[in-house]
Image (cartoon, rainbow, N blue to C red; front, side, top):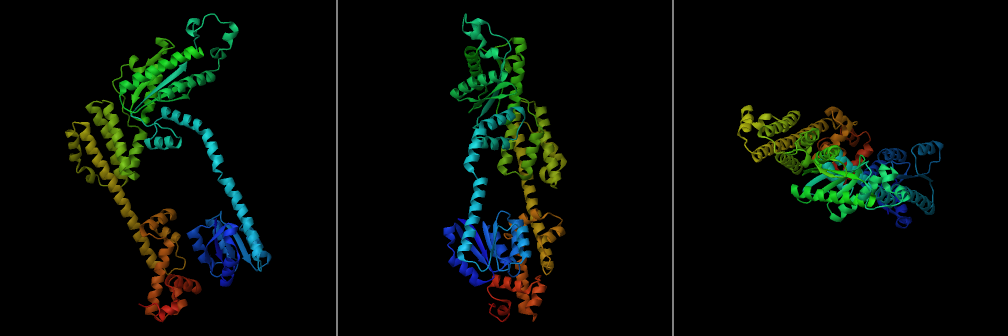
Length: 554
């Protein structure tokens, strides 16, 4: 069923259309009816209909004015104009406003039904074209392996924020959850294997010419190696393999963080892959194994280690598995407080949730601990993070004394910290206090902003040109920003609040003065007395005159 709004100033026309037309049979549901253009606009805001059927001649806002408003605010809504005016100027305006259908009065219910069928067919066709979910899903499923490979490549190419990794892993249907990770790379060697290593003896030259190694197609060779690597990795359920920069990359994913177990098992798998490639593809490959890391955001470190290990084939020879820790003395993974981590901490302090901030701080301190840095280096890294906190506090107008006390207190804390857990507890408390202060100040600024807006509205509601744009110009803010804040704080829209103020003022003037209704309408900001009376009756259920005569008094 498509939603429909019916607007006509003649009650008998509205009732007749509602009764004579089989709306449900035509595929429509009449959500509401309106007796003028302004009321129709309010109902359209409320229901967001698919179709609006409107008369061209209505009070307060004509059908063409309403159509112009619809085209601005709800461009996809279909419009059917009903009118008894056949002058060319109306047809011209209808064409300019892109009216979907134009029906002249008097018309039969059958004629309107045919127009509705035509409009429904148009909507059906547009929806079929725009929302062909099955086609889009099939296309996405076909593209998913490519998207997964590109994302995995990005993980080893550059450091990504944890939030982005989680989101893309979910979107690309990749289960990368684990307690420890290791990156390895496999490169196809250019050397030719001796005949005995090929697993055969003899063989014709013609047979050898057909082998994969003689085709000199590096991409085809890589793809063949990838197939073997994927088969073994899937069998072992120990990670994923993909091609990146002319090497096959293995991403080991282990549920626990036992570094010795992860590295040993990965090296065993690399040896099996190397042996299988030699046996079945008659190719020589060299593999380089990186360091074990705890977080997906640190895969770049492990990948760089794997590439460095691969470089040692120039010294150790080809057709081998080389682990970085066998060829280089590496005590720990370096902790790097780079731009990405700084930006993520800044974001969490300013707009993140308590959980996001806590997760980030847990990650930062765990990486520092795993790095086994010296006490002096630990203090340097902590100072780097504190610099971010101080900068955010200054940008947000938070008094530093609220966070640290006086300068001596900050330095005293540094002198007393003897363990990473103490530093973490202290730093977590500062960050939580800063985030809470920023959130509180933001809420206070929202309340102050709304209070200033209310004061301006209450002092100027009598101006007929009072609008949200005028208020925003006074407050020097954008309408979009103000609209969201006002609605959230007041639980109503600006338009409804302004109307409520005007109606309260009208009630007071009706009770306390002898002013005529049209004079009161002008004093509370209405240029059209009839529309003032319409709004008053709609809000209170009685006319201004009835209210003055005591019907509305309690």
